[in-house]
Length: 238
Image (cartoon, rainbow, N blue to C red; front, top):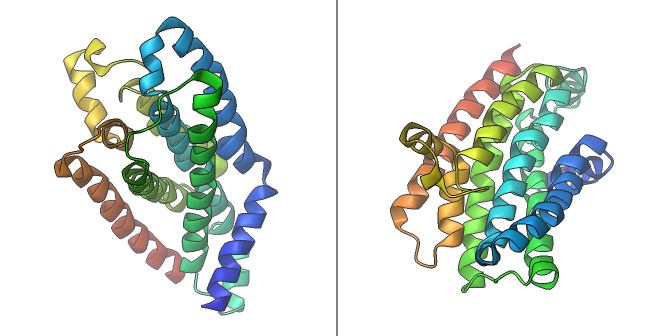
């Protein structure tokens, strides 16, 4: 167990030295929050009611889809994988360490938005902080699971960028993050329900979430976990 926590801490420190990770987990999301937050609140004062939630969903979606897969793409197709095998370290620990490290990074960025939005833009805080952070943790876990799946199935960074954008860009446009979904054509509005961000925004903005809203996030997590375990078993045999 001590070795496991050491691995998690080591992965977290490695991430802090990775410019690509820092950009997707911290720099771009926080700059976007400051820039878009200023625009949204000046155009529509009502945006202050959900600014924290929408910017947090953006941050988590970007970090999970563009940042979380990077260490996995750098690990499993490379000679680092052989070092794991020679050292007798189970290959699944790389994915688990990356998962936990990504959760910590994204939770920290979410806390920064939560703390600074009321000061910078007079944004409204969620009514029930305990419930909010519980829902936030569920959403982060679901998104990281999907992002980890990208890192396991995509073999190089160039392809990863393309596939990650195919998830990230629709998440921005079809989920209500940037503008109300009722402005979209019916088909695109329905397509948004296939993305974790839609359900994440629902549970974070509502004061009384329906249990059914958590089911899609659970399905995303379980499905990604099953496919990820299958892929890891194949990687071990290669």
